[in-house]
Image 1 (cartoon, rainbow, N blue to C red):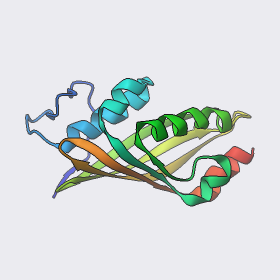
Image 2 (image 1 turned 90 degrees about the horizontal axis):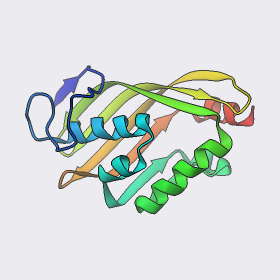
Image 3 (image 1 turned 180 degrees about the horizontal axis):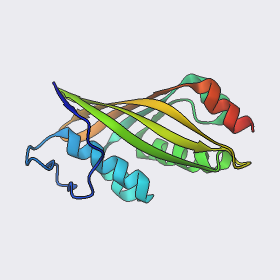
Image 4 (image 1 turned 180 degrees about the vertical axis):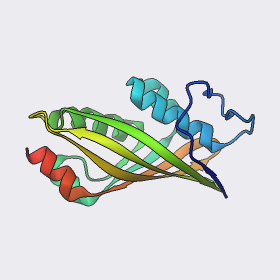
Length: 152
């Protein structure tokens, strides 16, 4: 197992190699966060298997954000729904833990309500890989605070 406390580096390439030259899933995760930050949906989807499981807490189902979305179409559907219930979101991954086919990311996200109120919330993302692409991403966080922001 390896722990990396560094924030994603813009120098990391999408070719599957991290800044140390090791071919591994950490570079793919970093590329996914970079793509999310840049709002580059094509680059984000390029990090994912076409059959990805995109999992969010069931407590957000009333807002169309909870449960498991399947495939690139499910990820697109989820990401299209977010701006209808939130004013914005910025992810800041802080720690990466690699173990086999999994990368776990601890971080914070700044979530802004439609009315303009912003809260910083912790998250844990668990990424599972097969053949260099994410096949599952599970987002774990405090749904009560998150729902409070959506409800305004």
